Structure formats: C-alpha cells, structure tokens
Image (cartoon, rainbow, N blue to C red):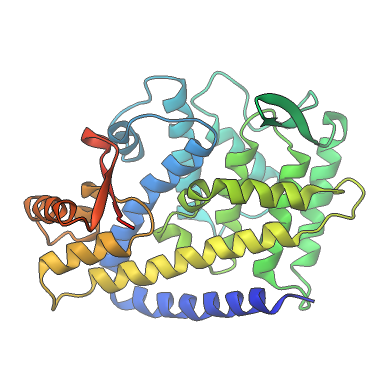
Amino acid sequence: MLPAGLVNTVAVIAELREREKERKVSFSDIFGKLESVAKVQSVKGSNEIEGIVTSERRINEIVNQNSAPLNHNEAEIAGYRDALALIHDNYASIDIRESDILRLHEIMLSYLPVNGGTYKDTDNVIMEVVDGVRRVRFETTPASETAETMEQLVLAYMDARKSYNVNQLLLVPCFILDFLCVHPFADGNGRMSRLLSLLLLYKNGFHAGRYISFEEQINRTKAAYYKALKDSSVNWHEGRNDYFPLVENFITTLLFCYKELDKRFSVVNSGKVTKRSRVEATVLNSLLPISKAEVCYILPDVSPTTVEAVLAGMVRAGLVEKVGTARNTKYVKAY
C-alpha cells in the first residue's frame, strides 16, 4: 500500500504534466528557451555531484559545442553532453536494453582514454567518509556476476512494465536503485543512473526534466538523495530492501521540476507586466540560484542591460543575495 502523501504527489504531477502538454502546443518557442537553460544545468549538475567541475563559462562553451574539452574534467563533461543529447533527440527509439545502456555508457566516456560500453571486470564497492574515515557503505554485485545480473534486471523491468497493476512512474526509481546496487561499470555509474532516469521518464511521458534540470535538483539536495539511496539499499542482496525512501525522493524531485516549470512558464508568458517585474519574478520564483545569462535566456525580449540593472537593484534592496563571483555570479532569493 502506498502512503497517501505519495499518492497525492503523483496526482499533482499528473495534473501539472497535462498543463505542460497543453502549453507546449501553443508556446514551443518558450519551451525551447527553457530547454536551452536546462541542458547546461543538467550537464553541470550531474557532473558536479561526482566532483567533476569547471568554470561556468567553460560549461556553457562545451554544452553549446563552441569549444573542445581541454582537460580530463571537460572530457567527462563533453561525454555527458553527448549522451544527454542522444536521449533528448532519440528517447523514443532507445529502450532499457543492455545494448542501449552499453552504448550510452560508451558515448559518455568517449572523450576519455578508457573503454566505455563494457561491464566492469573487477569488483567495486560504494565508499563513504564518516568523520574523516573511509569505509565501505555497500558491497556491489561482483564483476563475475554483473553481466547475468544486468540481463535479469532488464528482463525484470520489461516484465514489470507490462503489468497494469504497476504504476509506471514509481517503477522508474526502483529500476534505478537496482542499477546502482549492481554498479555495473568501473566508472560513471552515478551519471549513468541520472541519464537512465531521464530516459525512463521521457519514455513514460514525463518531460519536465527537459525544461527544468532534474540533475541540478538532485545536486542541490544531494544529502537527502544519498540518504535515500543508503536507506533503500539495506538488505538489497537478500531481496528484503525497502524501495520507498528512494521512490519518495525521486518523486519529490520530479514534483519540484514540474512546479518550477509551471512558475517559469508563467513568468516568461506574462507579456502584459513590465519587463522589470518579469525579471524580478523570474529570480524570486527560481528555487535554484540563477545567473544573469539564464535570466536573459528565459526572457529573450528583455535586454541584458535591463536585466543587469534590475538584478543590481534587487541586491541593493535586499531581495536577493549574490552567490559566486565574476562570471560565476548567481542570484538567490534572500531569506
């Protein structure tokens, strides 16, 4: 039995999804602008979770394919960009097949001097650091059993999604948890789990992550995300684990994306109010820190000069606070 709160959350997501579908028909240009911003945030957020970082300027240049990667971190970022683009453009023809999973992994690591697209050949574990001491948090599936376990995981998912008694949305985080517990690759399991999350969401008709970065929201609340993973993986090898903590975290993250999309659309489409008011609303309604460039993307009819002036005025008035410096400056609502 599902808790009432989770049932209500799924119902709200369904309602917001229908609103998104209706709006996309008439306002494809607005959704295109939102998608441009979300792509950058997704590539940045998913890699940042793993400690793979570069400057804001370089992220934008790499994602927009204006520059080749210059170092190892940027090679990781470029690979994620390409794998994400494949899912965005071809999710309908990609499925949870082993061949597709391996292909996505190969693309994600294609700029690195390693062989992507193959399962691990040595055992790996999930580590954690507590009070400065490293320890094993979870023993993943042994390398010798990985190929067979992945085959069983894929077949189990395909079988479960055929059942009318299974909620397809709630099935997605269950698959993701199993994937992470198997940990089938020597490198990139976390980022692959987020790519597969988007793929499964898109295939089931939930597209908010295309316009509001699902990965960035995980990054923003990663402490809660990792706790949910930890709680749901207890007794996984014995088949007695509780999927609910990760399911709840996953669905809550998706709800945030839909709510944020609803707010962003309302602001962008408010042509009758002043440009200043729209800039202010864009920043104040964003639950994530937002940069001047992102505001300009969302409000293409407002000049960068006007955006800069409004942001400066909001800082002076104490409405927002600056986060970061120089090119990496972002703005967040002051509390």
